[in-house]
Image (cartoon, rainbow, N blue to C red; front, side):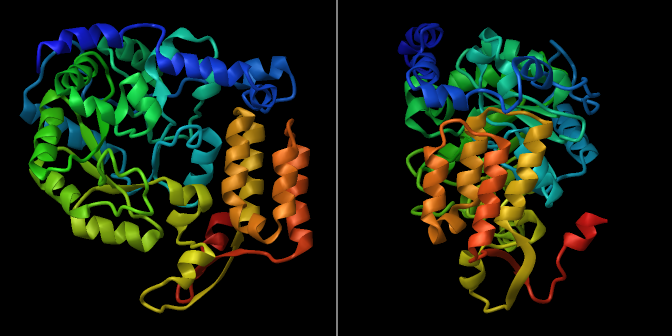
Length: 422
């Protein structure tokens, strides 16, 4: 890199980062927002007990655990595949989503077919400095396989954060794909694509010092060869699994820009480690099409799952059931988003998370219903202090008003609900 690289590294390590200032403002400037940041438990005492990571679970045997030992690329590739196969080679994966892929939502998706999941992106510096980190990261023994994702721009800080979650996950993941403005200001995510030596140092630091494998999630460069060089660099640095979002850093609108499965296929063919794909998933058939066209091991879904956490079980929203190009018949699958909200709320009662996460999920899952009954959405927006009683009542109110919006399944496929109930 250019000489300015050393100057950049110094600036990266400043403690008063834009992200920390923004976070402080978020927590203090808006009283209703501050209440939403509280855990959804009944008392401070219960918050303290329920928020803790549950009894440490035995980490999946991490065959890559050669601390401070540099292994040959052949050995690392062999161990990367051994670890992935030991996890069952999951195909259906919950993507990392800020404030949205938290424990209760991961467990809900798991019930409806998800086979692995990422945590929300955690800021490595904030995670190591705050006493409230358990509000942002919780897990349990059923929550596996699990990727814990961090954004970072300092190898030592990243390693310190990773050490704290190492016993509770199957991969520590580095976020190299976030394209949002806050990532530009904080100099992490996809904006590290401008500083590849730093990216390499982040991966090497974890690969040489953790007992669990390191994974990375990236976006593609506009130029295919740049993308391939990037992916190979990550593999050489010690990355054991690579998830590729088939859009560039500037292609933030998933509805406007289609993910480039062709580029993902080229990355898959160029690497020796397992590769996952992200982008263009609206239904289970898209997942199968992506795997067939790219040759990847599995597929991540984000936005589609937020609206319909039962995607991996074959359920479609009305929008995608009607927009079926093959003209196949779809019928009421016996499940609706109101049912999913109730299931999600019950999981939140068992595994408390900040109310802001719950509010966001309720808005997403009930979006189709709110279009029919916008006055109910306004009730939710006006409710500064959420309670489970209020939210359960909200779902009941929507059902009493009528206009149920079901989730659909192919007519020729029996609903999975009976099997899920048994």
